[in-house]
Each structure stands twice: as C-alpha cells, then as structure tokens.
Image (cartoon, rainbow, N blue to C red):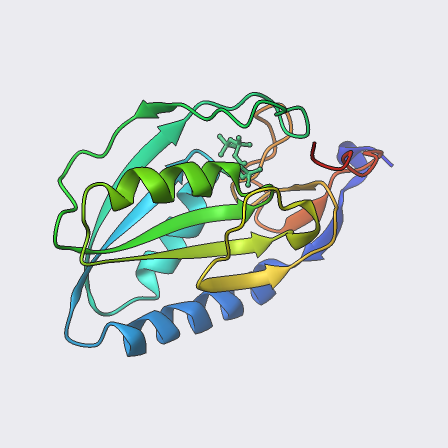
Length: 183
Ligand code: PRP
C-alpha cells in the first residue's frame, strides 16, 4: 500500500487530541501557580508543542532548539550536535522539553545534559510517543502520550525524508520494515 492510497492510522487525530489534552491537564496540576518554559525540539515536535501548549493553562513561554540528525537507525556514534540554541536563558526556570518521539534517547540525553548546565529550577520531558525497545541512553520522559513498539511512524510532525509531517493522524509508514535495533 502506498501513501497515495492512504497510510494506516495508528493514532487518529481524535485520539491524539484527547491524549494531548490529558497531558496538558496533568501539567497544569503539576505546575499550578508556576510559570513554565516549553522547549520544542525542531522540527518534529512543532505540531505537538502547538497543541500541548494550547492544552495548558499555567503561565508559559515557548522556545525551540534544533539538533543535527545523522539518520534514524544509523546513528552509531551517538554524537548529537546543537544547531540552534535557546533564545532565552532558562536559569531558575521550570523547563519542559517537548519531543514528538523518544527513540534511542540520544537526542534527549544530549539536551538534558546540556540544559542541566544552565541550572533550570526543574527540567522535565514530555514525549508524545515513546519507543522503549529502541533505547540506548538511559532516559525516561515524565509525560508520555503513547508507548509504541518498534514501528516507523509518520504524521503529526513526524516525517519520512521530510514529508508527511502535515498528516493530522499518526500513521504507520507503508512498506517500511521495522528499524534495525539501535547499535
Ligand atoms: C526525531 C525526533 C527526536 C529524535 C528522537 O528527530 O523528533 O528529536 O528523532 O530520536 P532519538 O531518541 O533516537 O534521539 P529527527 O532526527 O527525525 O529530526 P526531526 O525532528 O527534524 O524530524
């Protein structure tokens, strides 16, 4: 089946909306009366951050970082490089790193270490999807939307060769074999 004939939906837009709203409510409870900085990791997290932020009532600001990618499943060195830094200092602030997917954990492991050097008041992670079977770096998200097996997913910000980020549902990439185990 090709994408033209419609990819298989894993999480519908309705299901995503419900889950993101729940995550927002949990964040509201956890940070009641506080201000938070939501830091999205470009580009995949852009759509999730936009929806999560609108599900949150506590005072918040946005920032974005970008890291270099060496190709999913082929990142053997574990080296991740920052290519766009924060715009605003996070020292003394409550920070939530917002990711579309936590896979090997190399990206968030790198960002967590980097951000901790800036001495935020607190640092948590919100990941819409979690693929624990692929983990290389010991890292867990504090807020997880859905836990999934080792499947290649597209849509809702997630791409295949930069395409399909705009699909409103999270879909399985057609004719895509499972990714090789992380090295
Ligand atoms: C994806 C995702 C995370 C990262 C997670 O980004 O958005 O940033 O991979 O994988 P990891 O846990 O194995 O590090 P990608 O490199 O595909 O870039 P993109 O966000 O621009 O799509």
